[in-house]
Length: 282
Image (cartoon, rainbow, N blue to C red; front, side, top):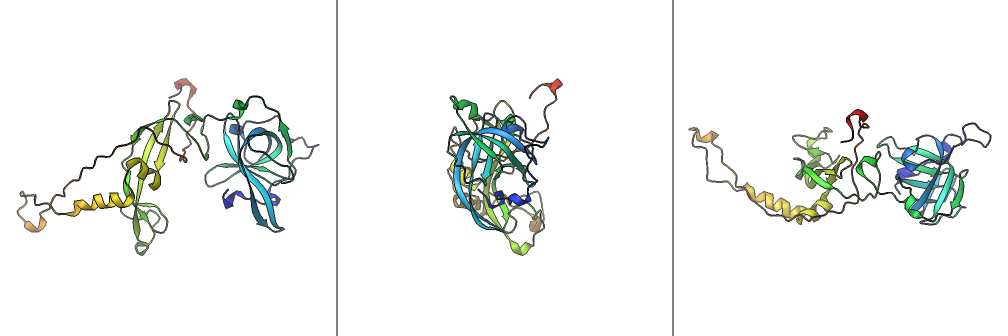
């Protein structure tokens, strides 16, 4: 659980009272959560741990983890430490707050001390297991497993330059206008498109994962690329001015065996507008 995932309950809107007309309604699927609202939902505890956080009243112990149903999975944090939670058990959370992070529109389900928690007896846990398809990923989500085909490898894959300060990709200069003295370093990435029949999604393999796929680490790839720095005797004889003659660089061809399947534990998602019904799904 990241530090940003701790929110002071004192900063939340007041929870609806039992007599309030805004009392949360029927249980809501996790894929339908409404940011900034108190809701009711029934979900399974997928992952659970205790964490310690500090606020104006001192240190306190909290539960944090991930809840899941058949439609989505969402991280949660529980301030109601007096109510024990058990992994792989299903609970009804009545009057839990849905927080949306402005930076990436991801959600956090907050169980406050006023949230009512009831254990649910479930015979078939398949109702609380999400089998994600790309079309069902509407928000950033962690720990997703997809079975899909890489349809496109984008041209900005391979060895790239990153700014040492902001870590942005550098082509001619830093896009964030960092000073040249900050310098840059080599990095490795594979930018691609993933398709599973329901839709497509952008996928970026970062250095560690890309190295496993290519069976080459960053140092080996830099060494292979540097072998092309030796000048070739082939020159442009059509230019009579020797000072303007250019020399071709030799090309190194390396055979890389790519595995049939790739396990990716994190993916970058993009939100697309819903398809127009008259056109059908693509």
